Length: 236
Image (tube, rainbow, N blue to C red; front, side, top):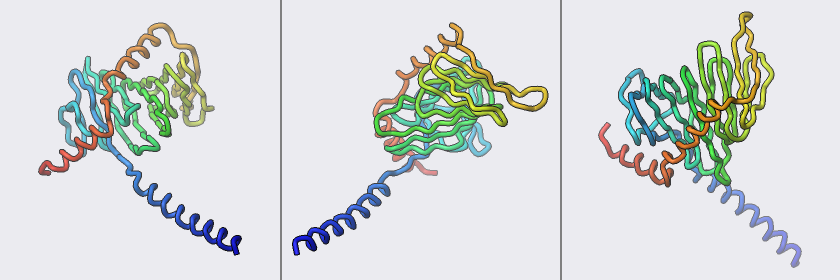
């Protein structure tokens, strides 16, 4: 009899745990926006074919394009520990954003210029970050790196962690801290990727990117929730 009761209680508990796990999963809300936390110089946002000046505390949505002029820079934060730094004379399209307490996935296209990524992985949150240049894609799980784009060339410089560089028809390269990779379109329309060590100038640029960690918004989740609430109260 005791065995029957024990089995029944075990079965009942398993039935209760399943719905509770599903309920917790449903409570994990996914956010699909970023936030401008720093801007200097002439910078614009293009949304639905309309262009206007970009502002600090601007909400960035999927498919937005950020354009910077000479001596300009924009920091876009996606979570408590991750941001991108759009450098001068650059154009970046934010393709997708998926941020929840357990994960951060974002995919951006560097159309031209230079883009820095700083993703300090906080405990319990998984990162999946992709930056696409003209000839290669950089994939990371949490690191610090710079991507540069020209018409037929993509360069990736890694300051911390490791970045996987993929080019169509080329072997994937894993680029570690202190290294750089260049993916270039050759005369026969094939992509070649080569890896070297960064020079002193490139190392100094990486250190400048790391200094922008101070521009990140503290209590990011609370701040962006507040901005969203205020935005929803504004007349459309």
